[in-house]
Length: 262
Image (cartoon, rainbow, N blue to C red; front, side, top):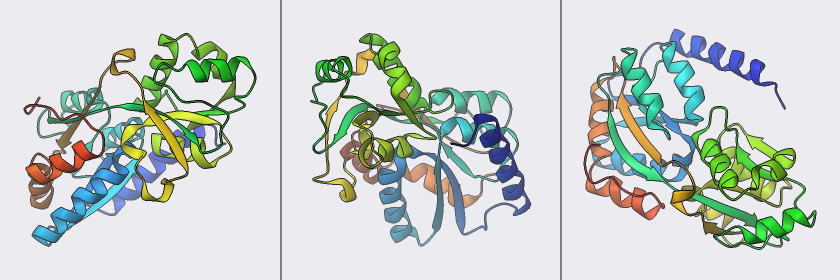
């Protein structure tokens, strides 16, 4: 695994290289999106492109890593974060048009590959028993240092008193999408990931999941914002993300929808 310091240097180097490429063309938009949106936002973007003919370039990753890049003026038009605080901090620093808009509230899921010794239940009693009996050799979450879903996974495990026992066995994804990969195909017995990722068609019949109670962790309030120099296509896509079709897709993907702008 690449050391954290090296990953940060690599992220900043990518930011510099992206900046050299300039801003998005007038007929497209470049979007930095939290990786829990990989399925839902891809579907939303396809619907938008079909309706408008405008291209949306989606780049998925950790919200914390995007935050670091955007502080250094990475050339994105729109940022969809899994933690609204990153957006609010960018707004405070003058990097965005405004404070943005709440677009969804995420949920956590406990997942396990079919055949895992881990028995799934929403109170995590099966995880407790499997950990105590030594059946859990590896357990996946996103890195809590910069991935919001990793932070909330840690809070959920702390809530039930399992963090200290599982910490030595954790395999951490750079983002929650990678954590999902580790949890179900990377040799782990399970993991805590984004509910929005469990309906991946490529994984159907290969995984089981249960939803973790929302009151076990701080809310995953997900906020989006236009960057200061966003173009017209980004503005149009930003509006589209609050429309009926996008909201239907988000809700179907397991997100809770905000009542208003937030």
